[in-house]
Image (cartoon, rainbow, N blue to C red; front, side):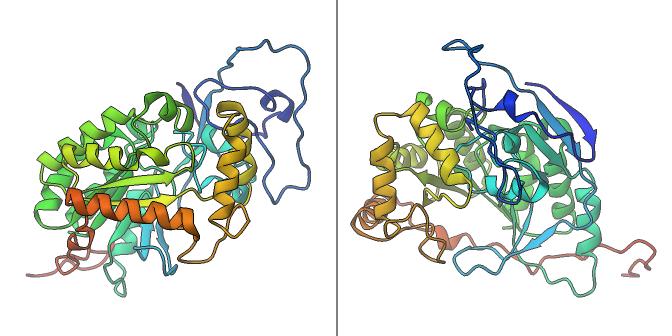
Length: 372
C-alpha cells in the first residue's frame, strides 16, 4: 500500500484505465461517474488484460484545510446529534459502504475513487478546539467516524483521530467511536482514561467470521479475528464495547448472526446492534457489479430478498425503515437478533450513557484565562 500527499483536487483519473478491471485490494469493480457528472462512463474490454490479472491502484491523499469539523445530525433514527469525521473517502474499500455516494459531492466517483482518492483534515484538532470554545456551544456526545472509518490505514501516518481524542480528553468531552480497525488499540491509553470518567465508548463492526468473505467485502479492513482481539483488548481496559453486526447482507452473511454475536460476547462485548444492507444512490449499481464478480450464483437471490425488505425497491430512505427493512424476512432477522442478544446478555446497550456535565470549555485564543 502506498499514498502520497497532494494539496487540492487531483486530476481526474482516466476512466478507460480504471473501468472493467479487478484491482488488487480494492472493493469496487468500476469507477462509475457520480450523479452530478454530465458524462457517464462505460467499461469495455480492449483485449489486453488476461483472466486472473490483478492490477495495483495506488492511494492518493489530499490535504484538506477544514473550516469546520463538527457535523450536526437531526435524523430521528440516528443515535447521535453531532459527529467528527477526520477523513473523506476510506481505503478499507468496503463495497457496501453507505458513505460512497458522498464522494460525488467532491467530483469523484463513489466507486474506486472513494477508496483511492482520500482527504485528510490535518487541522481538525485545531478547528475542534476553536469550535468547542464558542460561548454558545453545548456539549453532546460526538460520534467519531459516523461517515468513514477514523482508523483507516492512513491514520497511522496522519494521526488526526488521535489528535482529536487528545482535545476531547483535555476538555472532558464525551465521544463514541465506530470502527472496524485494530488500529484503535493504539489509543487505549486515552480511551481508558476517558472511559474511567464515563466519557468514551467504542463500537466494533464485525460483518463476518469468514476470512474469505471478509476479504471480498472489506479488502483492506482488519481480519475478523483481529477485530475480536480488539474487542477483548478494549474490554480489558474497561472501555465499553458494542458489537455491530453491520451490514447484514441476505444470503451472504445473515446465517452468521448468532455465531458473530457469540464470538463478540466471548471476547468481552457488552452490547450489540445491527443494520441491514443499505444501497442508496450509486451504491446499488456498484454493489451489483461486485455481486456478479464475487457471488455470481447468489446475486439474483441477494437482490430479490433485499427488495422484499424494501417494498420491491433496492432501497427505501424512510427514517426507521432504511436500516431495518420491513416484511417477513426483515422481521425474522430482527427476531433472531433480539433472541441472541438476550441469551448472551448483550441487550443492555442503553446503559452506556456518557456524561456531558464534566465538559471544560477551552479558552479561546486571545481570551482571558480564568482566575480560579
